[in-house]
Amino acid sequence: QVQLVESGGGLVQAGGSLRLSCAASGRTVSDYNMAWFRQAPGKEREFVAAIHWSGSNIEYADSVKGRCTISRDNAKNTVYLQMNSLNPGDTAVYYCGAALRTSWISIVARAYLHWGQGTQVTVSS
Picture 1 (cartoon, rainbow, N blue to C red):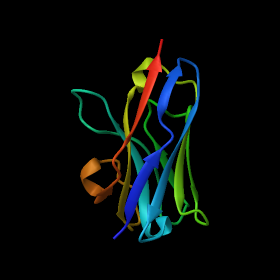
Picture 2 (picture 1 turned 180 degrees about the horizontal axis):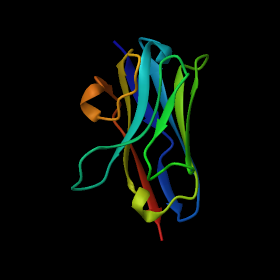
Picture 3 (picture 1 turned 135 degrees about the vertical axis):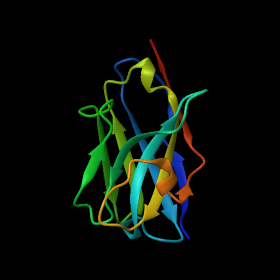
């Protein structure tokens, strides 16, 4: 079973950038489809980005497309989310999730069996 630990969140002004990291242990990130979700207060957890276990396919939510990049470093067993042009609407707790290897990428949270504890991202206007 994989354990996930997110880091890299913080307070940033609108227009700024952050890079979130999701460090895995116990299993390798290439054993899973990996994704980033976020959850704002009073809202459901929503999909942000995902990368297929093979690295051959990547999906983004429309709200972050063109501003965020998901990537994976197998040597460091870590998944990243580079976020640029941040705005207050991006404020949320960001979670890293791992789903069983499938031929497709899921954008629903219930498909992801393993989660980290989350990292807070706050964007000030």
